[in-house]
Image 1 (cartoon, helix red, strand yellow):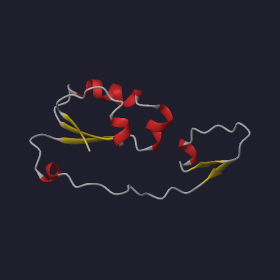
Image 2 (cartoon, rainbow, N blue to C red):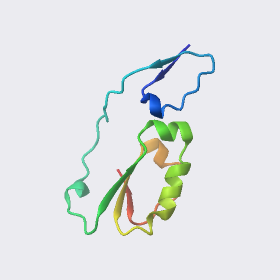
Image 3 (cartoon, one colour):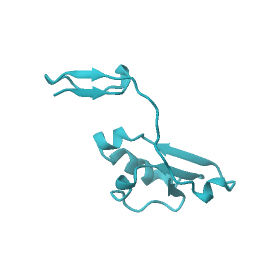
Image 4 (tube, helix red, strand yellow):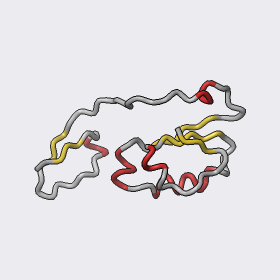
Length: 101
């Protein structure tokens, strides 16, 4: 068995525990998505995107996202939280200025 690591070496969190680690070049692909009509409207205030990618939440859980969202209501902006659908169900309620997408 081996682990495939697609992160740059400076960002890798995998520790060599005897299993080989195979570095692999990251190839960006976000997969398909459904176009949301509200994306086209001009926001009334700044619009911010918050994302930790797809791997970090799987490795470290949602603690960091939860802490960021706890402070989101204090920000005068519309915040778009980009998170996978299955991870969304693990989050508690979000402030009114946060959307998932």
